[in-house]
Amino acid sequence: MPAKLSTICYIHDSTQRSTKEYSIKEITGISRLSDEDPTKIIYLKIKAFVPLDKEIETHIEEYENGQVIYLRGKFIACNGWYTVNATSIKPMPNLDFDMMPAVGINIMVTGLTTQTVKNVDGESVLDFHVEENLGDREPKDFWLEMRHNSNINYLANKTNSINQTMRSTMAILTGLLYYQESVVDTSTSDESTPGKHILKLDDISLISSNRPNTSAQSINLPWLNQESTSSRNTPRTPRGSTPRSKRGRVTLSQLSPTRKTRSQSLASALQENPLPTMTQNETSSET
Image 1 (cartoon, one colour):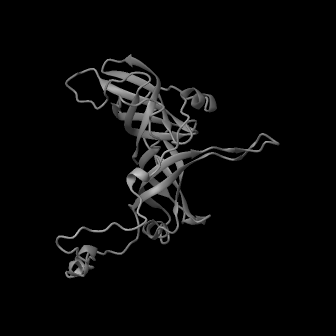
Image 2 (cartoon, helix red, strand yellow):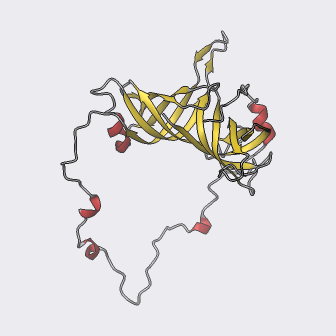
Image 3 (spheres, helix red, strand yellow):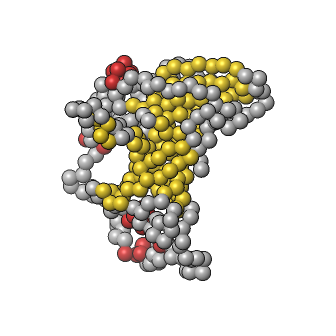
């Protein structure tokens, strides 16, 4: 079951070693999660395999420590960080940590669930199990909690149908993934609520379901149902006249900047989020 990731991240440090066939690059990346708060970050343990044979095409471009890159690859979610096998690395030379946009972790995964949807505080919630092969010595699976606004009918119609007549359903999910830290009881120092990966759902496609065959049913295309005379009902501006602007309209020059001034600091981000222990295991170059 594939698990694909794309994001923009800062190269905190990197190493490189060679085998008979590959140059193996290992990167500690930092992705920002908030434009307003530069201390909200997530760490990425990235591996890239670059063939030593120059005749073999690769999408791993040259980079340097301190650069910002656009990253794509297979991934597994761990507690507070992600391990990634990069399939594409493209440097973004005009950006640094302070200027790097907080695009978050965009993912496409195939997951399995045995649950029916729950409504929690106005959100539809389901847990999915995700598997991905990054090598014999790397984690192979993780759980994520899918969430979406229950009032979004397009998503609700799909998620509400999951496992109504089946024991399990496999689905392709896309959206923004983030990690919710565990909650610790200050009186006992015990973990009262474990951390979890949460997917803010953009779209979902059900792979296995007991939907009836609709191939014989007519397809309702909304753009074919528009009245051909609709354009006649649209008011037209008389020739030679100048359209009047509506009162109260705000021009672009009057708009204030949409982004707040950010107190960006790599040092404060690292201080607030100490580098986790990300075991540097060997990853098979055959993946």
